[in-house]
Each structure stands twice: as structure tokens, then as C-alpha cells.
Length: 96
Image (tube, rainbow, N blue to C red; front, top):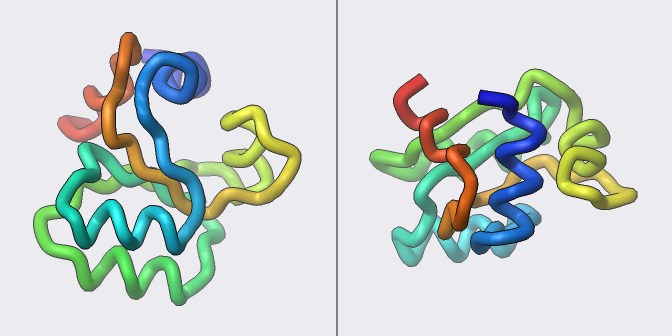
């Protein structure tokens, strides 16, 4: 699986939520199929994720700047949630 391609496909064909506040709400509503966190995410984000139970989590090996670029954005993204994968195979990361 090509992570970058799968992420872009999920963003284009599925439902992906970006940003700490939005992801926190999705987690609280138990709607996150997978949460992806940047390697350099702030401690506040990591604490929020650690408090969630049974949360499928994948740590992106790059920085939040790189994760933002992979999402097609020109700003940092420290965390995102996959709500619906669409035509992407990104949910296979849950088993990795």
C-alpha cells in the first residue's frame, strides 16, 4: 500500500476530518475509523488521543508540515481522522 496515494484517495472519495478540534469531536462521537497523527504532533494532541479508548491509530513517520502536504494543504496538519475511506485502502493501516 502506498500511504500517500491512499491518503489522497480517501480525501478525494471519502470523508476525512482535519485538525485537532474537529478530530476530537469525531472521536467523542465514535465516528473515527482511523486516526493519523504526525510524528511531531504537540503533546496536547497526543494526550487527547491517549485518553480515547479503542482508537485505531497510525503514526505518520513525517512531520505535520509533510502530513499537510500529503493532504494537499499548504499548512501543518498534526492529526486527521478517516471517517469514511471511500475508494481508498487506507483502513488496512488498522491492521498494520
